[in-house]
Structures are given as structure tokens and as C-alpha cells.
Image (spheres, rainbow, N blue to C red):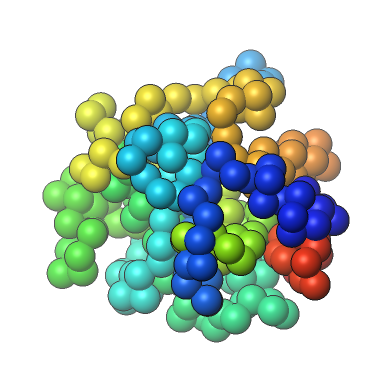
Length: 246
């Protein structure tokens, strides 16, 4: 996608997004890419969005959604690694420590709501914040310690929905509880663990395929996903969709 013109990108993504004027300013969003390494091969968690959605209908995606500023006030068992927080508030990020925390926690919350997976530690937990009662009910305190910042992408203009999305990654052992029935919002169906090669061939949006490519490169260079890695940033500049590095 790097270097594509806006016209070419609109054509390529016509089946991924409903086109329209949309909001002028992208909304903060976060998504969590959960990985499981089995017999040397890496699998990624994905789910299919319902066909009724205006944003990426019927596509396989990672759990995620819009950031709620109130998420920043939810207590955690462990915060972000300092190197990861630094990247989230780096140049052009439009983010300070409070927003960075909200972004990371929104990825954790959405993963519970959409996939029924609670990222954190088993320990008594209480909160009055909306969307977090499931953690209290199952005795899980959310944890950000295992999250790694993989990529950032801003939806190009001309879409009905526009998001400034941070793609975060964590290993499966960060999951404290896996609910067999999935998440309470039921926004994702057909939730599956796919090998990376198969995930790239699934019915996924272009930006998802691009991020999976970034993940493959990151794992080849750093199979343990250590903190502070390079973070690519995709956005439209002068009618070209470009890749920068944060």
C-alpha cells in the first residue's frame, strides 16, 4: 500500500469500506493482535465482522474498536512497558501518557467484548467503569505489560468511518480467561486462530494484510517481540498513502 495514490486506494478498498464524506477528523482506535506459537509456527487470532457493519463488513479482522477516554482511569495490574509508552506518545502521535494508556486499555477491553478473551492477571478486581464489569466478574485485573506496539494507520479520507488505529500485539499467555461463548457484544463471528500465511490469504482488508506483513518482518527480526521495536505509520499525505516510521 505504500505510495498508492488516493484514486488507486479508493478502488482497492471499495469492498472494504463504505465511501462517503465521513467525519473530518479520525477517531482514536486500537486493535489487539493475539499470537500463539505452536511447533515453531505462529498463529493469529481473527474474527469475521457481521455483514451489516458499514466499516469492513464481512471481513476477517483483529478484535478492536474506538477508544473510550474513560478507559484511562481503569486500574491495571501492570502498566505499559516504558519503551512501548514512549512509542505511543512519540512524534506525530497526538498522544500523551493518559491517552496512550486509554488506547492500550481500549484494545484490551475490545478484545474481551468481541472475542471473550480477558488480558490480565487473576486477582480480585473492582471498577465502576462501563465495559469492564466482565473483568470484575471473572476476577481479572487488566494488564498492559505484555502489549507491544506494532503499527499505526489512519483511515484515508472519503470513508464513512475514519480511525486513527494503533495495532498492538500480545502473546496468548497474556490471556487470563478465555470465555467459551465469545464476547458479550457478539460483533465478531467465526473467531479462529490462523497460521500467518493463511491469515494473509483470508478475506481481509488491505491494511490488515499490510500489518500482517509488518508482523512477519518483525517476528523474523525479533521472534520474542522485545519492547521498543520500530513502528511503521501509514497515512495519506498529498494524495499518497505513505509509510513512515515512528
